[in-house]
Image 1 (cartoon, rainbow, N blue to C red):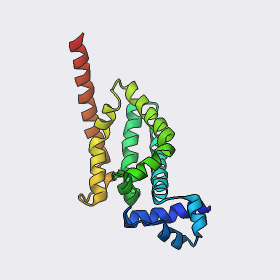
Image 2: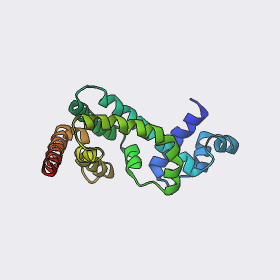
Image 3: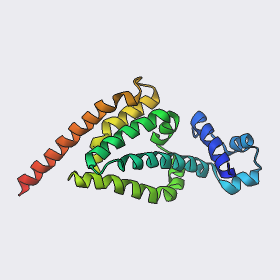
Image 4: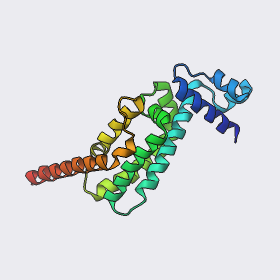
Length: 195
């Protein structure tokens, strides 16, 4: 394991256990046994280290999501797979999901932005293709498709609901499909009324 990976592994553990406010570079350095120079060479600040944890978590999630999207040429089937993988990923990574769902301090989001820019563009372009094939306006269609799922996952990682997300996969897929179909029908009616 590289020095960077050792640092990220320990930083992830501590950040998820303690939260950002209590998280310190010194504690990570101490736990990894690295010198201050090695630590600060790899990550010059607390926001930079927290941003790296965020970026790695987001990349892991997006990798799983992209694999799900590519399971079918049928856009609706790939969206069903995306929703199922979202639920599964959150269930398998609850502490990391809680961190990714949280509102990041501005200095952390600013530090993460350059590293995520291309990955986010690629991720959302792949998702957009599915909605375009369905003639559903992106990004609003994605919000409608994933809305109930995302909110349930937020509640689950906070401990306010007990049923594991994957136990609700079919229910949330049906809910997303009903909402998406209602949205698409409403958009078609609006377009027809204008013509």
